[in-house]
Image 1 (tube, rainbow, N blue to C red):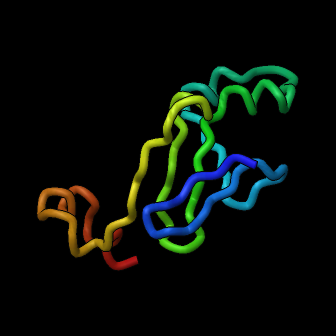
Image 2: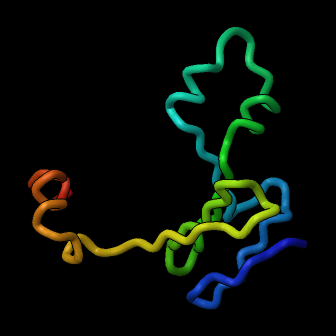
Length: 96
C-alpha cells in the first residue's frame, strides 16, 4: 500500500478506498468548466489529491499526480503572520 512519512513521523497511507487522509480539491476555473450531466469519474480526474496528516495537520499536495513527490504545506499559528498579511486578512479573520 502506498504511503509517505509525514515530517512529524506519522505514516500516511493512501491506498485505501475510501481513504481517510486523502482529500480532493478542484480549482474554481476547472469546476466552472463542468457542464451538463457530470460523470463522477471525469470530476475525479480533474481534481488534485492531497493528504492531511491527522497528527500535525500538514498537507501533502500531489500537484503532478502520485508519480511525483508531493509538496508539503505546514499550518502556522496566526501570530507568525507579518503585519502586511494580518492587515490584508482583516481583524475579523484573526479573531474567528
